[in-house]
Image (cartoon, rainbow, N blue to C red):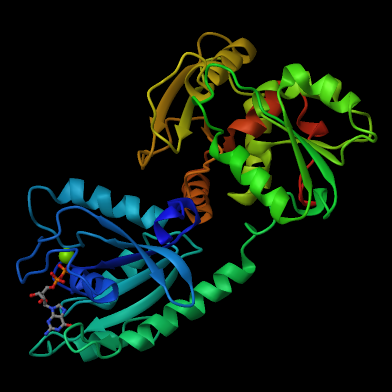
Length: 401
Ligand SMILES: Nc1nc2c(ncn2[C@@H]2O[C@H](COP(=O)(O)OP(=O)(O)O)[C@@H](O)[C@H]2O)c(=O)[nH]1
Ligand SMILES: [Mg+2]
């Protein structure tokens, strides 16, 4: 059953530290099986290994075993990039302190992480016990947990520590109520979902599925329709719906048909509120309108798929941007884990709704843009700004700025 939980809803726990600190051994120990190769040879783990695990008391998690710092092999650049990609996804970092770590090295590598990441420091007892470890324990901001993967000593304490952090994170999570203040149990919500050439064959896309499921769980009635059938659908209702949620591509068209007192929002705006920082996205979208004609824009998409005829990120959004800002605009695209470390060549980043990413992953990307003073927005909010309806969009919280 755990395999059915998408990665975007899993708590991501990363194992970090120098090569040979015992990361892969801990991964195997937590999983109770040999999934990662371990050896005294530095650089044994050549790429990050992702493995799903159900942790009792927490639920579905993904463990990430990284290659490790201090890698002096010719592949160190690529391995570090793989470690960075894991860092971007990390909710909880298990930091294994090695014999040759110092206060500086510990500070330097913890500095690579986003602000919302929680750290657990670990000393993995090799035999014989390395001499500097007791001393290194004093360099960690918090008391390290001592473990031994061979005897399993300390593993229960570690799991308890992970659980304590996970419970706090899950309780404060804003992911729980997608439509928030916009809906109450018993409400009727109309969902407008175009099924054009860019819609996948025979199924609904993830944000639509997640929204329908959320509404049903909340005790709402979810009525699905297409833009073509919206007028007919609304006519058939005795009273206007409490809320209309539309695909952002047909926002303007749906806005025209929306009854006067019915709030209107989009799937991607709900995603933006759930996964990310909607205030930052709205500010980014406002910047969009005043960009110079030769601006550089990065369009980042979480999923990698072959570009399609009516693809929103590759075709529709660039066309809308060029229509608004002119043909001199430079637009680059990245997909999946690819996200440039240096964003300074860009005037703006426009991110997809990130239904495949965790909230932490999106927040880490946002903080990376903020550190480099680059505005960021997402598809739904950018389209709302481009079509002049940003002020008409309803948000599930009172966070609008
Ligand atoms: N006795 C003992 N040896 C360990 C323990 N953890 C790791 N090792 C040994 O330390 C070496 C490096 O471990 P490995 O997990 O490959 O380190 P990584 O490079 O951080 O993934 C291997 O020879 C392991 O068998 C432990 O808890 N006890
Ligand atoms: Mg390893």
